[in-house]
Structure formats: C-alpha cells, structure tokens
Image (cartoon, rainbow, N blue to C red; front, side):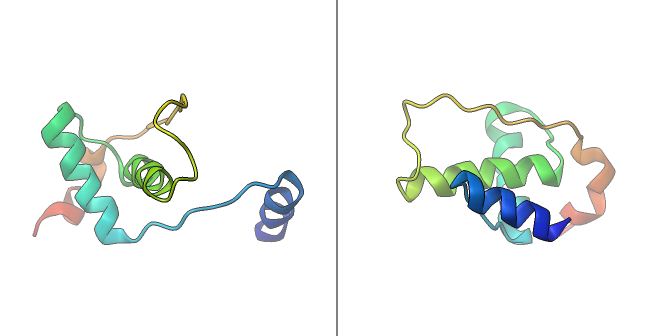
Length: 82
C-alpha cells in the first residue's frame, strides 16, 4: 500500500502533508468552538493540512476545497480529557 501511494503521488505531481497529534486535537477544539462541530481526528487532520497548505502558499483562499469528515469525535473522548 505505501509504495503504491508514493508512486501515485510522484506520478501525479501531488504531495502529502503531515499533521501531528497535538495539532489535530487543537484543530478539533477550534472547529468545535467556531462551528459547533465535534469532528473526528482524521477530519481535524484534513482541516489542519488545509490550513498548512494555505499558510505555505500551496493553495490560495480563492480555491474551492472539499474536506470529508465522515466520523465523530465522540468516539475519541479519551483524546480530549486533558
């Protein structure tokens, strides 16, 4: 699987973004406070990656994006206890 994904990224000229756990938790809380949504960590990772891409100028504010958040943070309450 890993080599297939890397080949697809290389062949398409695409890229990938890493997001650490602390950033996912921070973004989850930020989205909850601003939008009233309790997104799953994987959804928060997508929002954090989008924010990173915007800050680095890889994408612009005028572009349309779709982020799928198919899970709920309710399954991960233990991650947000502190």
